[in-house]
Length: 327
Ligand SMILES: NC(=O)c1ccc[n+]([C@@H]2O[C@H](COP(=O)([O-])OP(=O)(O)OC[C@H]3O[C@@H](n4cnc5c(N)ncnc54)[C@H](O)[C@@H]3O)[C@@H](O)[C@H]2O)c1
Ligand SMILES: O=c1ccn([C@@H]2O[C@H](COP(=O)(O)OP(=O)(O)O[C@H]3O[C@H](CO)[C@H](O)[C@H](O)[C@H]3O)[C@@H](O)[C@H]2O)c(=O)[nH]1
Image (cartoon, rainbow, N blue to C red):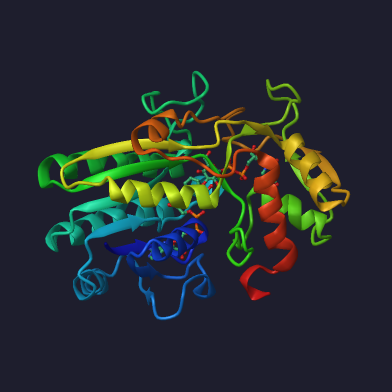
């Protein structure tokens, strides 16, 4: 299939592009490099452009005779979305509608969309299944939910088929440690913990130690980035114009912050100093996925089933690329 991957120079996008190419698909990456990296994309495959540039989007869709779009491009910092919601509504809502319009006008009828567990807010029950009510508690989650709603309408009225993939916490790096997580500023727990192990940070803050969880710290479901990539390839293969599906992508296992730090100390063989800090606003105590639906319907079978092996790949990347793609 000929596929346009928006945000393909970013963390999850670059791993997915690599797998698409390995599976024989033809790929064009569309990315403004706002948070992505030229080095994460094979040469000759990258169009540097912004989603708000309709002429450039048209050109990419037409020139490459695109049959399907995988849409990763977005702004994705929860905290920033509270401080600067305008950026999030513009980039995640207006720019995505812009993309949908260009697809519609150019007859592209298939889309895979990156959504998030943040569309649920604080869940009533765990694990979170696809039919759990959605009540986001920050602008980031709201922008993603708005697009989920728009997609249903675009499918019904214009026949654009879509698969919504709601990721839990993406983690890890490629098996060969040549692709990995490189965000500036970095806000995610695992890269920060490993940078602390490398001595690049003096300590890791634990945001809240009084949550109603066994050790008082937040529980998250970390899913390996290559397993996310394989789900996108499956989603694409099952996509039909006029059809809609939504799936949760997680390991179905929760790890607390203290567990992540303890396992990281074992894997790295280094002490990781911690500082107990106040809760971070907008953090639900525990988020764990049910991914039974995608396993049952699409045959998704994640390779990384335990947090140790996920953390090991992340460590292999950070230890060999302490400054990310810069070296
Ligand atoms: N990382 C996670 O744990 C996680 C969890 C749930 C959902 N998601 C979603 O998955 C997607 C990818 O996340 P990621 O962690 O790889 O983020 P990322 O920041 O590494 O990748 C996003 C990419 O999109 C590009 N981009 C952003 N705005 C653009 C625009 N207007 N035009 C063109 N390119 C643009 C960036 O340059 C970057 O390469 C996002 O939609 C995010 O909301 C991520
Ligand atoms: O220095 C830090 C950084 C994070 N945390 C904690 O570690 C947990 C995980 O935090 P991350 O920032 O790594 O991940 P989030 O769960 O906040 O965010 C992820 O999941 C969200 C949905 O909840 C969004 O989809 C978002 O894009 C994605 O990165 C949270 O409890 C957070 O408070 C710390 O204690 N110290």
